[in-house]
Length: 296
Image (cartoon, rainbow, N blue to C red; front, side, top):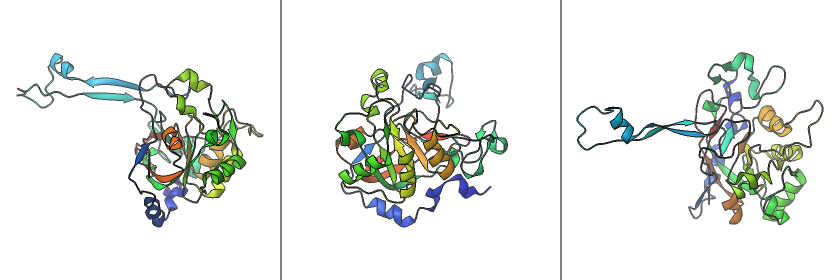
């Protein structure tokens, strides 16, 4: 297998684009594009719950007669450490190229498939260990504000024509090597799951995906757990419940970001910025939790 196929088009981003992206930093102000994670947090229904479990605590060290550093410890030095038990797709995250499969051979971008590349510890081709760092121009497109509402209704599609109009109204253009973030307003209500459900799974449709692909983006994200609108209006024949994931992630290696917090940059009308994201390189994982930054 060609190892370059484990990365996607971002592998070819010119170094000059990194330098160009740095020029967006004028004030040094940064925005976190993630919400905190916690046990019981709202998640996509198909993912396991997020858990934080104490493993070592100061009282536990004493009760267990544990001496991590060996005696003597006359100052009662202690520490705390924990297990994180969570899907890599918990909260703000990036989908690895091996996350989604299609076809009878269960293949994914670059030629990976479950018969040849799935081990007892996850995929070994296109897994999170190959996720790249991102340091490039970011663009926010804000459909709710364009429509004059707080958040899109549940299951509302956003098409290419509307995104083009939003970009024009905001005074931005989508360029090759960009990361484009599309706000639905879903996380405006975080973590009120009941209120969030009123705005569940709005997002880009297939026409939007095709436009982003033609524009040369290397990644795109939304503030929902599914990125694309669900249920899709573009199921096609044979039926495909997630044609946007198929078009971008599986067929073209365009990374998808989900549960990205966009409320602060939308409030401040920050429509272009330096986008910085450093995924965790974990072998066998199909994605990575992230805390990306928009820097201006």
